[in-house]
Image 1: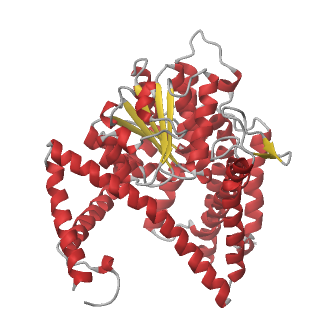
Image 2: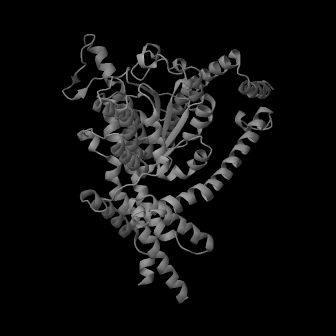
Image 3: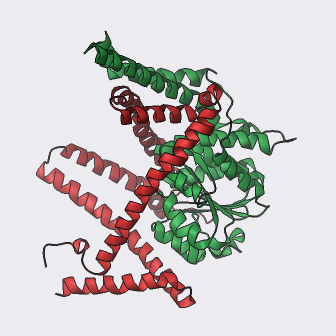
Amino acid sequence: MIKFLLNIDRRIIFILVLLALIIPLKSQIFNMPVKPTSTVEKIYKKIESLSQGSIFLLSSDYDPQSRAELYPMHIALLRHCFRKNIKVISMTHWIYGVGIAEEALKKASAEYNKKDGEDYVFLGWKPGFAMLIIGMGQDLYSAYPTDYYGKNTRDIPMLKNVASLRDIDYMIDLAAGATIEPWIIYGSDVYKFEMGAGCTAISAPDMYPFMQTKQLNGLLGGMKGAADYETLLEKGTLVGENLTLEEKTNLAREAMRPLTAVHLLIIILVIMCNILYLLTREKK
Amino acid sequence: MIKRQIPLVIAFIVGVMFIIQFFVPHKVSQDALTYVNQWSIIIGGISILLGIYSLIHFHFISIRRGRPGWGFSVVLFGCFGLAVLVGFLPSIVLWFKPVQQGAEPGVWLGFIPLKPGVEEGSPLFWLFLNLISPFMATMFSLIGFFIASAAFRAFRARSIEATLLLIAAVIIMLGQIPLGQMIWQGIPDIMMDWILKVPNTAAKRAITFGITLGSIAFSLRIIFGIERAYLGGGKD
């Protein structure tokens, strides 16, 4: 019996994972309150401290593979900025990220009646990566002569006073890969703007040294980070305000239920396999 | 001589020049950086064309020589052709049937939108939204299932190190979900926080220092002509 359990068919585990995903999605099981962590609070407080008309740069460097994890925080950040009338510059280093970045920007801007060119600008994708960051730091208009829709960046009202990265008030990189470090090395460290980051849960531990050195002021780590941000957004700025239907759609907090179930399943499986392993060792 | 020595001289001069440039805030120095940067971005763009050529060449040879798995190369050409066709279709149709300036391009054959480019509403955007996006998401989602299976088989307390890793993993997993907070607030606030800020940061920092020192050494080897692999080809 122990041997059978230790060598259990992986398809049974796959079915268990599938059930752990579907059941909480279709019911309210594992619906628990989310308490925001300090790393997320720092980003929230920074955006709260920005005055109306401040310039916020959002680099969404991820593709559809990481969409499930990063899109909720993308939307939450945009909602926060638009609610506070902060001007948003959106861009991406990932060619597959263009569609997602545009979709998020259009969705959030439509909720707050924000206009392209006045309240936000979408620069789209361009090759170059680290070179592009340096180029933006030297001269934004040269690095991006036109925005994604072909408008001359020098003629865009919102970019009138944004000649380079030095004019950015705050920046967040939403990353599925290794883009946060180049943004720190070639961007924030050189052109002196404050920076935060959002990343997949698996790469979040890699970012802790940068928070200790204050090169990142905060971090949104995976789905939990996004759920924390949604909680803060709901608690903080909505005193006396009514939530719109879109704002009530908290993508990350909805996803926390299946995520909790699957984490719990994996923990149970790991504990179970170790008990069985110890039992077989004692027998030997 | 020319093929070897001239690139080495260029690498040396440009390498030394831009080490000095980093420390000189003068306008001339900054303008030089902007200028070279623009060159780099342009060359980066050209490398995409080179990549496409390389991809086509490799898979064309695969089909011609009948290498194992050549059928996948045919699929690649099919998808490549479809994406190119879908991308250019609106522009081609609008070239033959132009619409008035400012007017909506409408649809072709009753269902194909004629909006050019990659913006929302264009055929290429439709392709991205309905094919590429779900395909990529599906591939990535499968990892979750394999991780669950692998965790069950591999996460065993075989030694003290493996046991420590196991305990740390369980704490981090609990810290990532609201259930951990409900069991004890200290799981995310004290235990997970300590693991991430102390042992994790120490290890990550050591790795970063190692990589950085290696990168500096490698760059110096290129600048001084010791490392010549980037030149390609055989021996001098």
